Length: 257
Length: 291
Image 1 (cartoon, chains in turn purple, cyan):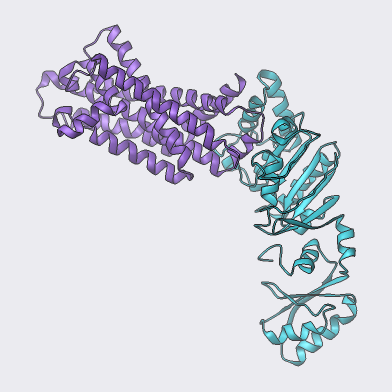
Image 2 (image 1 turned 135 degrees about the vertical axis):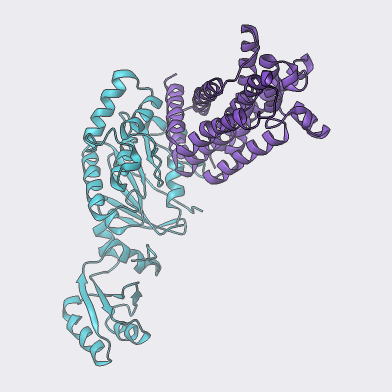
């Protein structure tokens, strides 16, 4: 437990004290919440503006979670490898699973902080949600799937991209491109049909739609992602990515050459 | 690649492995520290395989692995917690270690504000928690200024007083001189091994004459060759080095000979040989590419 707590606490501190991490994970989504709340809604009917702001807030919350997992986690792993910390850890009586669990818990805690700040700014900008307590719990569940899928992708990037800058650029690239082509920055209905298929398949985008559906309804989500098959696909792929990332991380990052 | 390494280090011994970059020193250290797996052969630490002896190993890799975003105290607490210490036990132990490495006053500053020497002392402390019996230091003084290096080895002197075995990897002769036994390593093999003094005696080095001239030329090297016992001249960035049993006696003649052909000597000195000179004598290679 002590090892998990140590790895977790270190990961949170590292994230909170690294300016690029703070910018990409917290400041950047907040900037888009502000832009989305005041610029992109200018032509919209007054009564739906708070809900458009709500949709923007959810999308940016998901984006923050995605960046934390897909870019920050691998940069943290790559940095530890580049600076010899992984070699140091391998020489110590430590289980890679405990190190991984600690990192993941640190990531979850940091992601929650980022999501809370983005939500607070969204609410301050006038975002509104039409939901009950159950819907909120559903949305939290889908956001946890976002963290799982993102952490899985992040572990894959961190395992195979050896250098810090490479890991950061790859992580940010994956996040921005997949978010753009899966409808997180635009209405689902505006996507071409091939990208709509991708948006349903890609667990981060699907979970984003699911959280939007739970908190704002089908009109804002663009489709009903709460069908059992769709939820099963999203949850299954999220868990699959996390398990795959974990196995490869413990095999390759902690492997004796 | 390591070839035919047969090495035994006794408990409490300070052993230095010296060789140029790429000679296999770090690979050997990583195998002992259980960071790398040997393709053949075996390593035993108090009779156990390295992977089964991790609690006895304190490994300090070449890179600065401490986190610059954390304070010195946080870095040590991280390692203490990983090793199973928690609460006030960990806090007290870390405070004690910070005092021991002379970082109490800077304990709550971020490591990014530390000098290279402070950071290296902190990293050595991460390898010296109770229970560690073998300290493996991989190139610990690379990049340190002379003052930081002296402070660092002051710390190592304190550790030497304990029962801890020290295994130092270095390419710096002056660092290796502090060890009780030195292995010289080249191309994956230990080519000579003994105490520093015995190595110097065994390889027939009396004096090293260092000559610096305003300009380097083949003519200078050719004249110096006549004063060298083995007719070899080592060219360095600043000038030349030759080995002579009569350093003091030939000094004036060296200056006169060079002066006669118009090469002004800007600096000349006679010194006792270093382990780097022994390495050169044995391999015809410099341990360090730049002097």
